[in-house]
Length: 156
Image (cartoon, rainbow, N blue to C red):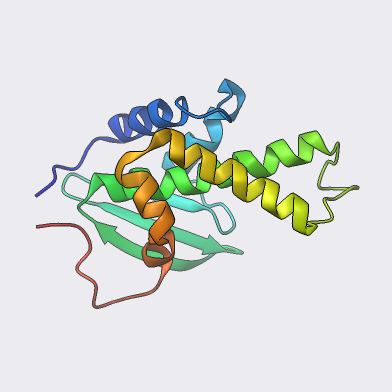
């Protein structure tokens, strides 16, 4: 059985892992910490509520809760936030590279742009390595974000 980490311990672990990647930049640390902020409800963004024994993984769309799962495995929490953070940073880097603001100008999401983003994401998980890279390759994010009321989240 895993012992649930505190909010600060989870954030520290996530930031430490992201710092191993070539896409790391301190200006993006907020992307990793925002899901832990009290009262934060992003649109289709992870929200983590840390308890003493487990964590709730939540997601909202237009203010309506679309996902609520509990896990006792701190590595699942770390992975979920890593996945979202790395995807977001890769997207922000593409916006910056192609000088688009995503308000008045937009990426065209060509095959090459999508591949470039996938390459950044895969390279980041390769640099992190271990179970997080394995989970990324196996598509564990989909498992964590799927409604599965019968799932006994975490490890006892």
